[in-house]
Length: 98
Image 1 (cartoon, rainbow, N blue to C red):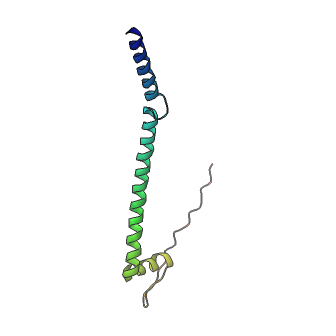
Image 2 (image 1 turned 30 degrees about the horizontal axis):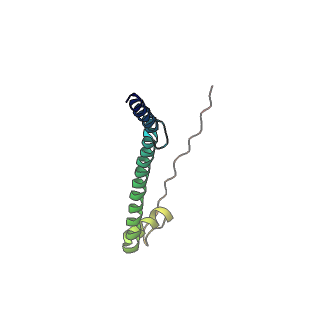
Image 3 (image 1 turned 45 degrees about the horizontal axis):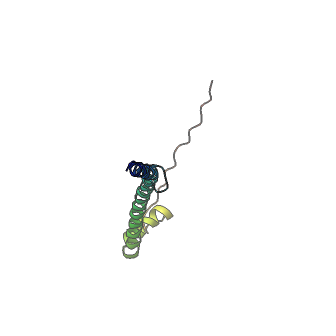
């Protein structure tokens, strides 16, 4: 009977060792869970970005306002009979250090 208890205690210790230190143990599972969480956050950011881009593409396909806004801001275009004013900031000379 004594040898059975010793055998069961040894088996218990072996299983505990595999649980805490071995492959697939608690630390590895915790590390993998952190990686999964980081991947989910990154996926959510990318999904949000994709949704914004899809909305922008749809707006450009159907609405003239978005096309006009892009032409004005990115290409510097103006409508007929509009006057374009460009404000150039004044250059400041760097001060000399005494």
